[in-house]
Length: 520
Image (cartoon, rainbow, N blue to C red; front, side, top):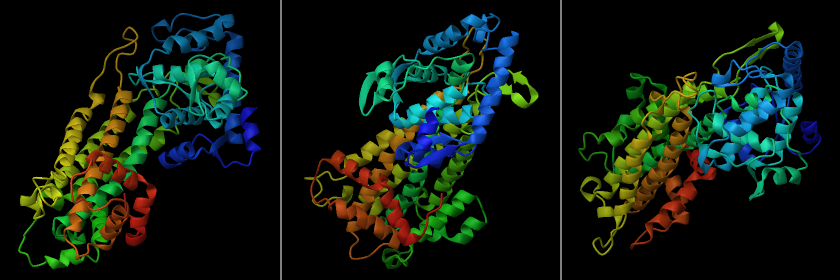
C-alpha cells in the first residue's frame, strides 16, 4: 500500500485522522513539502465503510451514485458490470472547467482536504484509493485545474473532476516545474492510472475542497496582514504626529469587543517609548481623523471577522462533504446536502469585505501621509517637489486597488442560478466568493506595502526623534534594504522590494521580539 512506503522514510510526516487539520497546519504541510500518512484508526473506518458498500452492490440494493445516474439522472439504474464505466464517465464529463490554472499550493490543499474528508469513513471508498491519493500527494504531483466552472453546490464539481481526472490518466500534471500528460507524470513516480470502482468517482468530486483551499490560503495570509496592518498604522501614527490617547485600555474596556481590545494593545506595544509622541504632547490637537483615531475599532472588527471565518473553515476541512453518506455502524446510507457550500460562501464573503476594509483605511492613512497640508510633512514626501513627484502615484495605486476591491467584495453568496434541470435549484457560489476573497487579500498586500513604504519615508523627516520601539524596529528593517528617496525612482520596483521584505515572516517576527507577540 502506497502510504506505507512513506511510513518507512526519514522525512517528517503529518498523520491525518480526519479531525486534526486546521488552517495553519494545512498550509504548513503544503508549503514545507512535508509528507502525510493516515492513522490506523482511519484505515479501519475506511475499510468498514467500503465493506458495507460492497454488500449493497452484491445484494443489488439501489443506492444513489453507486448504481444510479447522477443529478437529474438519479432514477436511472446502472447495472453492476457498468459501475466502473459509470465512475469514469462521471469524471470526464464533469471536467468542464475553464479559465486560468489554479495555483500550485491551492491545488495541493485541495488534495489534502479531499484525503482528510475521505478517511473519516463515511464515503464508501476503497483503501486502495486512499493509498493512491497519499502517494500522489507525497510525490509532489500537481494537477492542472481550471479555476472557473463551480457553482459551489454538489461540491466544486468541475474543479474536483479535473483533479480526479489526473488520477485516472486524463488531463495534465505539473511535476518538478514541468507540465506533462497525466499518464507520463504518473509514470515518473511509478504510478499507474487508478481504476475507479463504484462510488469512488462521486466521492472524489462531491465536496467543497476548492473553495476550502482558496479560503484557507486567504485566511492564512490574512493572519499575516492583520499584524502588518497594526504595524503599518502605528508607523503612520508616528509619522503624522498623531496622539495615542484613543488607544488607552480604559476606552476599549467599556466597548469590549475582543478585536478592538487586541488592536489597541498592539498599538500601545508598538508605540511604547516613543520620543516623537512626547515631542508633541502639548501641541493642542484635540483628536485625530478617523483613519488614525478609529484603528482599534476598524482593525478590531476585521480581527473578529477573521477569527469567525477561521472557526468555520477549521470545521469544514475536518468534515464529510460528499453524497450519499455511509453510516457503517447503522448499516445505512443517507442522501444529504453536506456538499452545499453556503457556510464557506458566507465566510468568504465576510472575510473579503473585512480585508477590503483593511485596505480602505490603510489607503486613507497613506493619503494623509502624502498630503502635506494634513501631515505637516513635505508634499508627497519628497524634497525638491515639482522637479520630483515623489510618492504621489504610489497613493494612486493604492486608491486603484481599493476601488477594485469594492467591486470584488460584492457578496457572491446572494446569487444563485439553478443547475441540473432544477434538481440543483439553489447554489451557493462559494467558489466565486473564495476566489474573489483570495484576490482581495493579494490586493491588500500591496495596499499595506504602500502605506509602510510611505510611512518609512515620512519617519526620516522627523529625525533625530525616535518612534516607539516596535515602530523603530520596523523602520530599521525597511531602511536596511531601502534607502531614503531623495529624487524620483521607479516606484513599482520600490513597492515590490518593500512587499518582499514585509511578507517575509522574519519582518513581523523581528518586530515581535521587541514588542512581544502581537494579537490577532
